[in-house]
Image 1 (cartoon, helix red, strand yellow):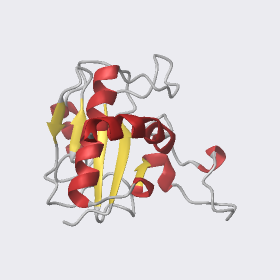
Image 2: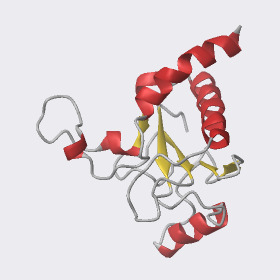
Image 3: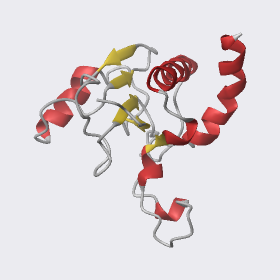
Image 4: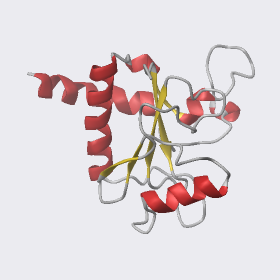
Length: 159
């Protein structure tokens, strides 16, 4: 696979240590998929786990899985089921490192790093996918904005 995109997801669960890679894999197998849909999962302890091999097409954004690496952060909703950015510093730190590595390795531009919700259709045709057009809120934060705030860290580490 020659990836052109990276898509960040959430597990749409509470930020709960009982949500493991094996549990997410079982959810996907129960849906009839052949394996977990994501290439990488970052659990609540901040540990980066390998999911579906990156050499295989993922199953994480309907209609947009070709050439697309899927990363899932455990969390994304509160105890009432409301979407919330409840990811901890360890998860976000490893997300930043992983994105930096994948973007460099595969020459993926920042414009091609998206949140799952950014793949929603632009229903009004204005060139912007607004909140009311999202099919889901996943990953419960604005990936592009967050990535912009990380550029100073990327640059500092590159020195």
